[in-house]
Image (cartoon, rainbow, N blue to C red; front, side, top):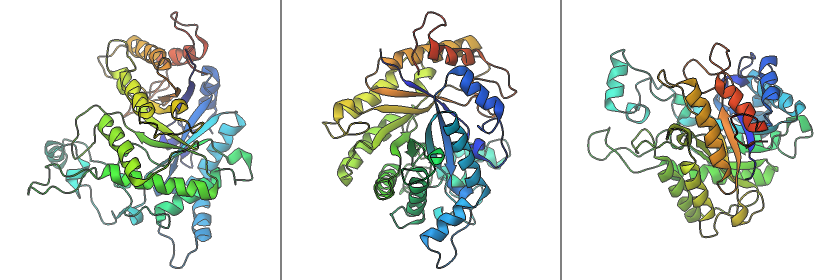
Length: 402
């Protein structure tokens, strides 16, 4: 049984200018990383926060990059990376969000494009009535363009240059860069407009084609600017049926593989396959690795096409889980959560070439209770479980993580 790298995916709030419970700049967070034996962290590069305003007319690429680097959010990200490096941690950097000037949402309200931002007409009606939640954030709309010369392409170039091999300060280099985050769930639109006259009816999928083109641009920027290893497509493993709101995880991943082939994308040793894995903790009394095994089979069974990270050879191409866990519910005992985590990790080690296993959050947020600690700071049993997965000293389970 091979060991996987254990990764803590910190919340996006962690790269805010003010340190908090998701920040490595906070001593308690660093203490938990060390105490659990975690060797990898996942941080966020928030484009909408690092470049909130469109570049001035006539601004050069260098001007754009200087303006980004000068923002408080970009400086906070630099500090987070420096802390990770000082602790000897492997770093995954995930790009998320897009500013309104780059994604066409300037002037949008909470009800604009409702058919793409709410899970259903009923969910939208509930929001309008004041009894439901808001839809998807405007920042998660796909950029309006994604060529190498587009604002998104320049953002990718910035990330590759600043945090890749050309960065003279080793304390600011990261190991992996994810250009996308859940393009089949978090981002929108997933589909073209309906042609039936009912805006809530399904249309043709657009998220696969758009994401594939963005991945190609990211690879071009990586090659030119000596960027970090790319991890794609960072798909959600949602097992909910495809709607205008989301695309089923297996459908998205298989369609993405086909689209990359069609586009002539050439995977190499600097491009790895990443995904999120919540479903394997969600199902079964004690978890399994069915969803993860399906993805590994897709990658390794692509007819020799996916010649990815780390060796550029199909048989050795790795699958890296960069986010995962399970959101607690009032009826779920803490013990059940702990056992699902341990058994899912054990099962994952039996899946060929899965080399990273990520846990989303140390301290849960009030709206997403998936962490090792409650939103109020107390340690769950899963904290002990995560620690045990690095040592193999709990419940008779073997060590799974390094």
